[in-house]
Every structure is written in C-alpha cells, then in structure tokens.
Amino acid sequence: MKKLVLIDSNAVIHRAYHALPKSMSTRKGEQTNAVYGFATTLIKALEDLHPDYVAASFDVSKSTFRTEQYAQYKATRVKADQELYDQIPRIKELLSVFNIPVYEKEGYEADDCIGTIVKNCHEHNARCRHIPSEGMEVFIISGDKDIYQLIDGNIFVYSLRKGLSQMTVVDQKVIKEEFSLDPEDFIDLKALAGDPSDNIPGVPGIGPKTATELIQKLDTLKNLYEELEKKGPEVFSKEYNVKERIINLLIEHKEQAFLSQSLATIHKEVPIDFDLNDTKWGEYDREKAKELFEELGFHSLLKRFGAERPEEPKTKQAKEQAKKDEQLKLL
Image (tube, rainbow, N blue to C red; front, side, top):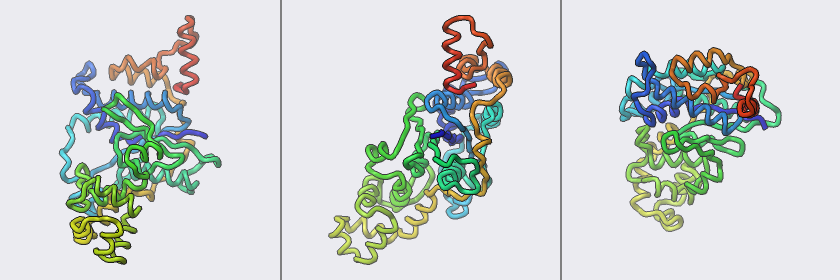
C-alpha cells in the first residue's frame, strides 16, 4: 500500500517548543527551538515510515465551532509564549520549501482537517481526489491522545512520547493493550471523565477509571443512557454493578455528558478539498532547502535531508550514503 503521512502541526510544535532549549537561535537572535524540533520530528518520520505522500494541518484560531457550543472550551489553558507563535511562520516556510501542502480552515482545529482527510480518503469521497483503489496506510504524527479516535485497520498514529526522544506507532492492538479500549472509545471516555487540558467538563465525580469500566460494560455513552432509562436506576445498578452514587451523577449530568461527547469528537466534514497528487513527497528544491537550513543554523540537518549530497560521490562512504538517501526518498 501507498503511505500518507499527516502532521498534526500544532501538537508537534508545542511538544518541540517545550522539549528543546529556548536558547536555540540564529546568529541574528531569532529563536528556533520549535522549528528545529519540528524539522527533526519530520525527518525522523520520513526515515522511519518512508511515505509516498506528506501533508500538514494547523489550527487557525482559538475561536471554533466548539467554542460556539461551549464558551469555556480550552478557556483554562495558559496562553503559550509569544516566542512559540513567532516560530510558526518559519515552520510553514519550511513546509513550503519541501513542497508539503498545508490544510487549515477557520472555525476548525487541525484534528478536524486531519479527520476529514482520513474519512474522505477512506471513503474515496469526491473531496479527496486521486486515492489508489486499493486504499492507503495513513500515519498521523501527533503528541496528543485526542487523535487516537481516528485509528483503524489502515490508520495509525506516529506518537511522540517523552518530549521528542521516543516515537511509537500506535495501532488498534496498542490501544487495546494500554487502555483496554477501542480507538473510538476515547470519545466517550472524555464524555464521561472530561479532559482538564481542553476544559471538557464530562460528568463531575467520574474519573478515567470509572469511565473506562462503564464503557467496557455498556460499549457506548448512548447505550449506557438507554439502558439506564429503560431499566431504571435500581435494576441498572444490580445488573451492571454500578454504584448508586455514580448513577445519580450520570442522571444529574446527562446533558453535560453528551455536550462533552460532542466537544471531544473530531469533526470529519470540514469544507476542504484534498488532492493526493499535491502531497507527493520527494520533489523539492535542494538549493532552497540548503539556504533555509543554513539561515536557521541547522547545519546538522543538511545531510539528513540530502541538501549537501555531492552530485558524484567519490568515497565509498559517500556512495553508500547517497544510495541510502535515494532509498529513503529524501531527495
């Protein structure tokens, strides 16, 4: 199968900014730690995954359809340093130099654009052109668990763990082993337990452990409430071994639970058009890449992107490196 890599750019940028020293800068004093971390993450993914296609997605603003649903969505987040935001144009410049297209839409988050691309590719939707008839494997680069809900047989998350030092491919088996859940269960997990980082309220008094147990017993939030309403609190409590306190919380905060479910669900109908041909990886101007990396002071990355490869390698080591670069499709 062909491979498509989708970059959850904001998640990678935040992880890179906090993982690397803020002292990293160009000779002119321009801070570059987030740009460098983003570039190294991209290179590592290219080396590990050997994709045929690459695209990126960004958040546009804090105001989205979710803040219209719930004004307090993400309201408790501490605003990131301005030095982080100042590096985003450079990251987009880097993507442009390497001919990696960016998909973003006002009113939606990067996750929603990624979810839309994944859904449309999977269904061979008209909004997603030139998809191979045999389908594709899709790898989403992200450091957030929110994206896990998109995982299925041909969709994986290239997950950033422990800063930028560890990358793991997460699939359905990993989700089951680590969380005893299926990927789509992460939506209802947040619906019940909430998510402090996004200020999704969930059901007050229900934590991740209890939420996981409820999902394991009743499969979905919808089925949970249907069973509770059909059988009544007393029978429901005995049949599913759920404490009276939990049942009372569920009844009291039903509306909030379904609101949280909506907030946690990645939207898959963002009005964007995706042409797979636009995302072909490997065709870029090596000279421009070299100029950008030299300007940023990323000398150690030049060879990893092939920007300094001699046209006629003379040494055995150089020839082997050139062959490896070709195999990795980094040129």
